[in-house]
Length: 229
Ligand SMILES: Nc1ncnc2c1ncn2[C@@H]1O[C@H](COP(=O)(O)OP(=O)(O)OP(=O)(O)O)[C@@H](O)[C@H]1O
Ligand SMILES: [Mg+2]
Image 1 (tube, protein in one colour):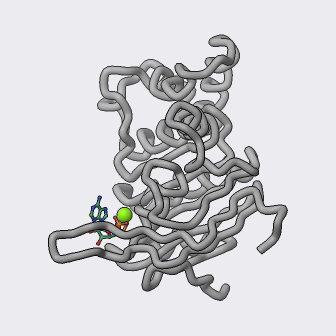
Image 2 (cartoon, protein in one colour):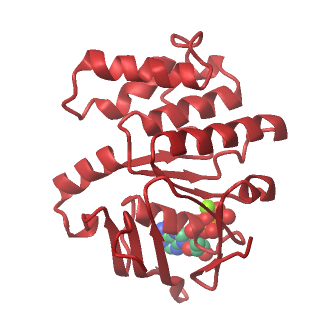
């Protein structure tokens, strides 16, 4: 594994305590990525894909092993620094967009910036540019309920990108969309991640979406296996 990696995951394990004993979900995951890389993870339901993505995104803790993001080991940070790291370095796109229903499109995209110190006018202009990039410049004051599913996912993508994260993590981002809409959201995800030199990790059951990624892994028996292209 190269020392120059911007993301290095090594020997990651995760166990959950269940009524019937311990469940070993991740048994030794290794992954190295550089800025601008895009990887997809497929695997059966229950194989631990979301668990892995949440640990890489510091939303859950590993049982053992290490995550290193550009020299920072987030699990060694105290709670405040860890939250700051997550806010600044990680963007998440979920299957269910998780937008706030009472906020407009523009406000939803700006939410991750509320904790930051950048000037309001700068972040607002960046939000407008991102929304224009995904073709939503005429939907700025719409509320999520007034948008189509694909439009909501595009807002979720802009919100994930607003703080220019190193890591863009997507868990079934096209799972609720029809094929054509899924294709366009997939294209935006890959294109914008590359433009911003983020490291994109996408989890999906869609073989169509997976086929578009330069690097493909399958999560099997708790380990990431590189799928031959
Ligand atoms: N908080 C938890 N407590 C106990 N067990 C959990 C917890 N979260 C996940 N699990 C278990 O870990 C396993 C992996 O779950 P995970 O959600 O990561 O699977 P997945 O690969 O994302 O599946 P899907 O494709 O259905 O989304 C499952 O067996 C699940 O029951
Ligand atoms: Mg999942």
